[in-house]
Image (cartoon, one colour):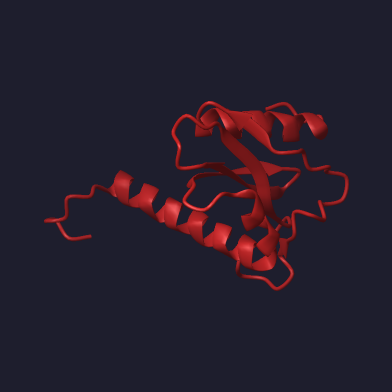
Length: 132
């Protein structure tokens, strides 16, 4: 990083994380194009990665262009234990086929992206009886 850059290390790390999450979302959509049917064109997106039973779940919240609309969060993909998304063949699984013993919840809503993602994470953790 150049000393003349206006971006500090923490901001650069956040940008890298968001680029990675966006790439993961695009990979999930390529694996399951039906994901786009549930997300209106022009929606704002927010992402969260969580780990349950060594599976890394990718949660995506979306809100249509109208700021009065609620955010909707859903599981858009997951990665098997020991695999890194995009690096091992077969590591990425379709969310329509949940991992063994982990049922996937319906989409959850909230007034904000964090609220919708929190509701989805709580529901997912509750389904597998693992405290948050």
